[in-house]
Image (cartoon, rainbow, N blue to C red):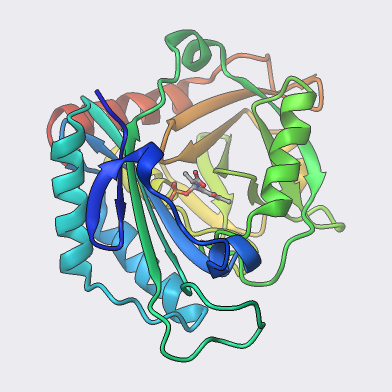
Length: 285
Ligand code: PDD
């Protein structure tokens, strides 16, 4: 099954989709994006993702040339054309093609790219065994709720995690306040309660994060969104991550130290099972 791209107005094989070296996405990282997963052709929480895309674009003063309904149509047709069981949809808008000058170009249309690839598989072994984390100081800007394509600090943090044979990097402020991870949000469990950092301008307000809080509510597990210190996470009963591509994943080590007894905990397993059930039951929104 081929990977497909949509570029501005047409679908094509991914290798054939080409953009100018003057695209402001290439030159400045001047753009916003979304990643979502379609399970058997059904995008998970699509409207929340598209609302976040609209907000990201508005925050960087990028006028989207496509309506939410048009983007939705491009997505649904792309998913159908690609024909994967589960599809990872990437949407990106940049401020368009113009000679390099920092100020916004006049009369330039944004570049719209979408790609349709197979959803990456998270192995059952990884889900069962859990993953390792490292801690890294968060050096990003003050608008991390914008899903900006300028991801250099995230790329460097994620690579540093991989270099340490860890799956993810916990990004925290110099004073120990935890923001999120480099490509996911973070939760911990203490005395039966699920806790996650409150939404601020230092984290992405994840769609999967919201889903986890909703699922905890369905399961009558108490939750709290609050200021979280690294110490609280290191001393937690359980730690888990949320993100579009892997949903919910337990963590078992931080900087080579076990979290509790170093296994994926029961609350994490309940939330992960509920996630699966929700998809199996076709509750995508
Ligand atoms: N990343 N935090 C950051 C910095 C992220 O980049 C992401 C998602 C998340 C989780 O958000 P959501 O639950 O809405 O996927 C949190 C995407 C998948 C990516 O860049 O590939």
